[in-house]
Image (tube, rainbow, N blue to C red; front, top):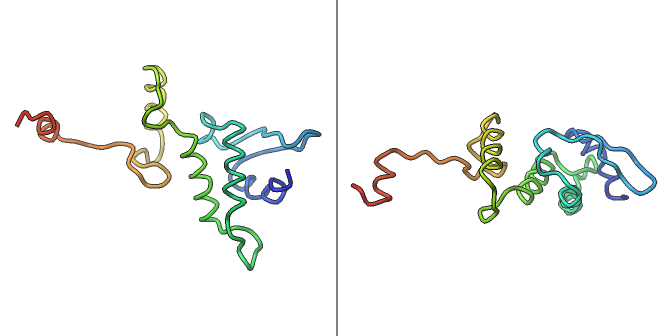
Length: 129
């Protein structure tokens, strides 16, 4: 709770809305990009990552690039991984959401999410050329 209170303005700047409760912090709104992956663990991972950032000497808060990196790291930790099982409807929904993004071609860290291959490249992979 103390760490969140120190970083509250950063969460607000990135689109999170919260309120204090007698038990801690209640998240009442979050950025749209996190709706499908956000849960308590995701939020705590973000706090952990933010707590390890160096403080900017002049302002007393982490630099914006570091905050964006921390949020991207937390999103990647919560993302679907290579060995995760998705049924067909979940896979279709994920692809449909991904294709609505401004840049669906890479994850927040720049790794590719879509790879284009020519027919020749496919045939070569299956030793048909």
